[in-house]
Image (tube, rainbow over all chains, first blue to last red; front, side):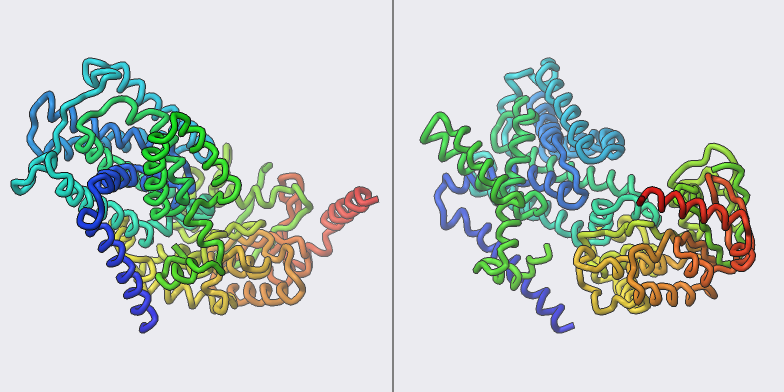
Length: 329
Length: 240
């Protein structure tokens, strides 16, 4: 009991440190860093939705950006075309994204492994084709512009990036807590059971398809929340947000950080987005350098940064991570 | 399977024996619903389950172990047994109830999981990952997972496969101890073990039941002796 309480406090201590870092960012860093952090958080939610499915169910989805983009498109359409006031556009956007995830989920839960990857790739491309071709609704390749972040409690999220940061941080923390709570719950354990042996789970009487379906929809929810903040921050949305490139970039961020972990999702997104900005400012061939970096990650750290740090049991970081109770995560 | 007519009475221990490829595991798969039957009828406790899905049959207290251990390799013994005990009705099993509480906080299934681990001799390996266990411990856990589910009829598919003599003796004692609590159907290549556990024996050959009776009757059956001699000879020829 005492050990359990100590364990609980250690995790609370870690949570407080992480919360403190996130809360202090606008006070101790530059405006550029705040903008980068905003970017990392909304893309981080997209990557977390992918790593949740990969880590818990053992499937890699190449269509999480679709749910991210669908929510974004609906926010843009409802605000710019129909003038709906906040919070209706994001609520409808997330709801539509969930309904589409619910419909497509009935298809994708039937397949596993490489077939899951292929089917989600095809469905993701279908969403991209719709965004690109259905010009009367989506404005085609130009996309929808002039989307403004809302005014909350008299503060314009559009004008104050610090306010936007905290507004997004609240939902980012909520989405992260939601996924962590799911992972820790019996539901999360059931998903890991399905990942390890689907036939055994069926023999134990679990509704395997329903559980896979629920996981898929929950992951889509987190991606959709990210999509809402993406469109509010960028002020526009176009087919590139639902493209294969975005899906692959999300997968690369997950691989870089550690595809089985939520922390890896955020870390990978942070590194990828930072390098994206830094390298593209130095050279036009920045994609070449990114490619070389991924080659090194896949060859020498296939479990990503978090996985590799955990593997080196004698390194100085691992005892620290174990102390914080992250060893079994 | 061809014209298989098999009746197993409540509380009985039945061994299914036969050479490789006789259809023993296929028969198990048909009973559990992992293979759908295109003809015939399967009844469990008087209810026709021929067209019922696997989950429904499990709800009717059917449990099975696999020839090859089918465990959650990356999870711990505790997590394996928790998943097996979770649906026993100790806690509210609705999706919503499971979402926002750590599985470790559900004390009753955790306690039951530990009791099962003790019953199958894995209490000291309770927090070890399954992929760190020996083959014998895998078989013990396999049995534990089924026991956690409290089945009324237990299908054991070669539970002694790959076990050492000591482990076999431990496993045999475990199964003998279950005879009073549940109906047991066992597939076992070790005839001595099968006959020591079973009250009745059914012999399968090329998808049909060719003999039924007590272990003594089966042992004395000339047709059974011939099949086993043929089977052994063909194996010897393969090795030659």
